[in-house]
Image (cartoon, rainbow, N blue to C red; front, side, top):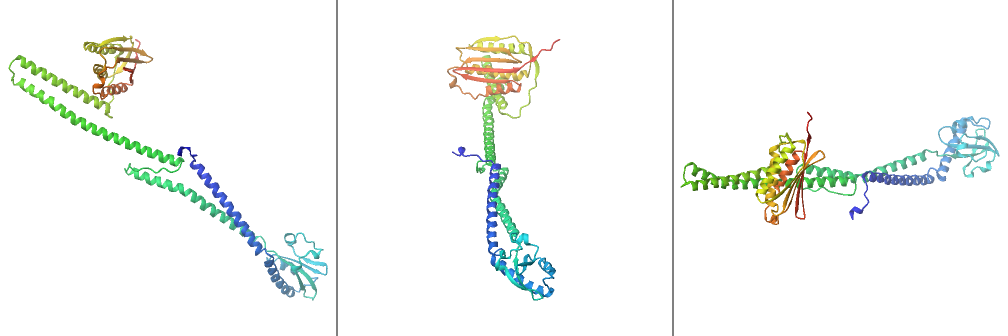
Length: 443
């Protein structure tokens, strides 16, 4: 069921984290922004706050008018007072006629006409006595300005940034923790503890990487296990060979000592000693051949063969002819299909003959003597194709087989740049050998 889950890449997860953080930051920005505006409306932009500030400013204005001797004909000091930095709007009436209006009208009270004092806010109306005793109707408005509004925007922006940063770091930290965990586990593997399993979490590139590392760990363990088994097999082989060789060698030495000292009764006993010695020698040779074949198949350090250019026609006719004769001498029926070849074959003759020897030995052991063995040779493209086809003996299963002979053949052929194929089907056994040919040089 895990395979049916939607696979999300690391880049997609990071993009989702960014979008989620941006949405949270936007929500935090507007929340602080609206809350700040509500707070400003109840405080610095509220009517009570503005009224108290207006009263304070008017008290200062009364003192200023007396100090500067402001009269209806001398109103210039009012411009200086209005430009001090405190944001106020001031309009002065004598009766219904306006005699003074400050410069901030358009920003603070754009809809009020200077010639309609009835439109002024009565709550902001004051009675101002000029220095000459003239009574005026004065309207004073305190304007808090945009500074507090900008502070609200700054606070909302800072809050959005903090929310974005904290949320994004929290979302990304999960992946960073997983990466740190993978690094720690890789350090464990690098230290040699390959039994430690790598943690696989999620369905993204990081989990695929962890899965690949764990599969590599399992592969190395399997390879080490195979090497240990091979090492044990080699040790067992050496032990077994040492034991098996000791017995015929001991007998061979005994027969040779008896013959060398002349301790035999007659020629018949001497011939018996010679036959037994030859039998032990052949047994030792067979064991040595098996040991070589085993080394050839399983050794990873084998020198490249010393090849030479041979006449393909002569080599095939000689080898195939010898092995056909050997098979026929053991009661097998052999048919030949040898096409003429006009090419050279680069090979190590000794190794190639060993491969053919193994094939012949394999036929003697496992082929059905009642059926015909078919040997084929023909040119196929730029190569030589050798085929061996036979019926498998019904007693084959009673014989012990390690397939070392066929494996030896396959390795020798591959070291010559060729291909070796063995196929068993419906009681029929077929071997195909492909070897590269070189054209004859024209004289």
